[in-house]
Amino acid sequence: MPIELKMPALSPTMEEGTLARWLVKEGDTVASGDLIAEIETDKATMEFEAVDEGVIVKLLVAEGADGVKVGTVIAIIAEEGEDASAAAASASAPAAAPAPAAASSGGAEPVAAASASSPPVAEKGYGANPETDTPTATKEEVAAAAPAGAAPQAAAGDRIKASPLARRLAESSGVDLASLTGSGPKGRIVKADVEAGPKAKPAAAAAPAAKPAEAKAAPAAPVAAAAPAAAPAGVPSETIKLSNMRKTIARRLAESKQTVPHFYLTVDCNLDALLKLRGELNAGLESRGIKLSVNDLLIKALGVALVEVPDANVQFAGDTLIKFGRADVSMAVAIPGGLITPVITDVANKPLSKIASEAKDVAARARDGKLAPEEYQGGTASISNLGMFGIKQFDAVINPPQAMILAVGAGEPRPYVVGKELAIATVMTATGSFDHRAIDGAVGAQLMAAFKRLVEKPLGMLA
Image 1 (cartoon, helix red, strand yellow):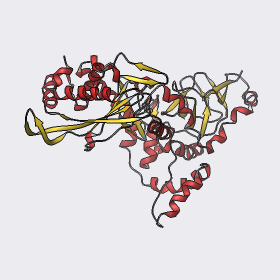
Image 2 (image 1 turned 45 degrees about the vertical axis):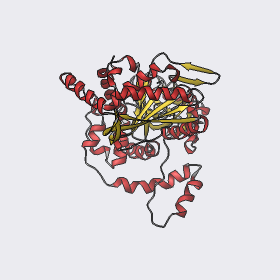
Image 3 (image 1 turned 90 degrees about the vertical axis):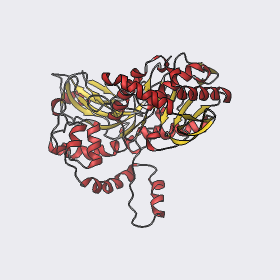
Image 4 (image 1 turned 180 degrees about the vertical axis):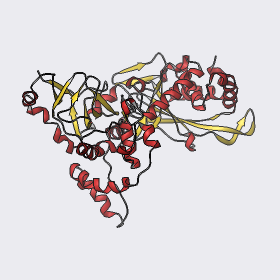
């Protein structure tokens, strides 16, 4: 009998998603493990694999369809030896209902459940995903680009095998995938192939052509069109459809600022002792190929401080307060189209060499879109470091359901009292954002004082 392919739950919090692109067409034969579709969730664009063998007899959901509920039948497969026409006739009409949703922007709502279980950075780690046969990080172009990319492939009668990340990079840089030779499994085009390929120029010209279609599809088009009308004539502009990730970032951070009573505490830390220790440790770790960053030591300092001040290592849960027995620190990492927070677990009890190795690994895989959901969900507190951009100080938005996030600025030479003398020291400003429902001002101050002490006397975090 016909096999129904249903919209899968690709993450623990997924309730609906966008069918970004079909990787098969009606009449194609598929085997277990073959890629069938790219599905965009609130955190990622993930590839959906077949688990059964057969022939695709009916695609019930159109490319680009938003708000397709988990469990909705999206395609019908006829088993080997089965009458394909009979299988197609058995496809139920209601299953196709989600297709018109492509014209709506209802993809942001499902993530309400996500806020209860994991942070974004604010999106509790906005989705990361793998470049090849696993999830890839979402980006604004995905949904808009899918229909345009599918037509030429169908016309040619042969689908180009490329990872979602490679497709997005090709779209943004104007590279023709048909001109590339894939180096991935079975000749699949991957990120490295796009980066090494020739850069084409037609990409910019393609953007205006996409605008009219987007204007028709988006219900909010009249509102969006009002802004350009007031702009000077001839000013170039582009309307970009929000990805599910960006919708979630916008919604959850707005909710955080509207519903979480933030308060902020700022300290200046003398980094000279920490920098000296880092240099000595790196000299000792060189033979093992490990190099500590300042951020690694700051993650360790925050983790130890949270253990020293357990009343700050908490989470507000309505009429209860959850107090954690270990410090799992979410580390903010910028990725194309959004932000994700990989989690370093049990930071206080891990050696710095282990923290450095894990942080380097998850940050690299986050940027390449190769994190598993469990690697960016959870965390008891967050750290966001913009020091590498020269930012002196900033206030970060709390990542619900967490109750605090530490914002770290750049270390720079400043006048500072060392002992009882005024001197020039390398000073870093750190600001903690706290949820006042869960953490009182005095508790937050104790945490910041502990963090400052550990940074200025870093041997304390190694004991």
